[in-house]
Length: 140
Image 1: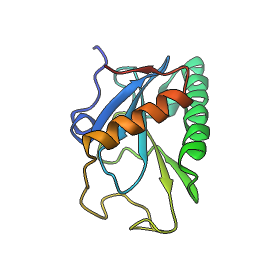
Image 2 (image 1 turned 30 degrees about the vertical axis):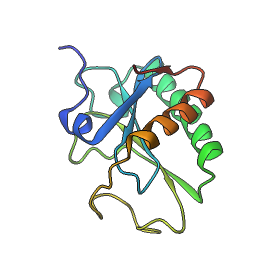
Image 3 (image 1 turned 60 degrees about the horizontal axis):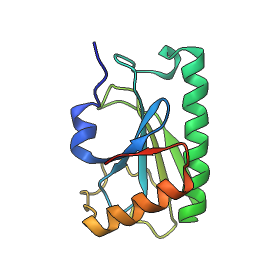
Image 4 (image 1 turned 120 degrees about the horizontal axis):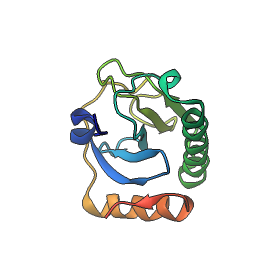
């Protein structure tokens, strides 16, 4: 079976680009800087199912993304999670949190309706991310 991003992730996100292993998605909710890494491997639901090489690559890409998000957004906290209760495909959330965000300090999952980004906001975020992540190949 070939790799495809889960339909729910496609519906909820904007594709920003690709690392060597992962797709980088922006969740289309402007209430939080919320990014998701999805390893391009079919039928993987858990990190331990990845090869050792892919596990290391996932953590490297996650660390690079994390560092860039902290630099760009200067949040109060960075939440990283691979939950997968509703979307079984392995994906790792990276959410920049602020003490003034609508759900602080509680988790954000399913708490509020999504507030979609404006096109200009998406383009500005994409430019910032691409500048900070030289190993990211931007989506068209």
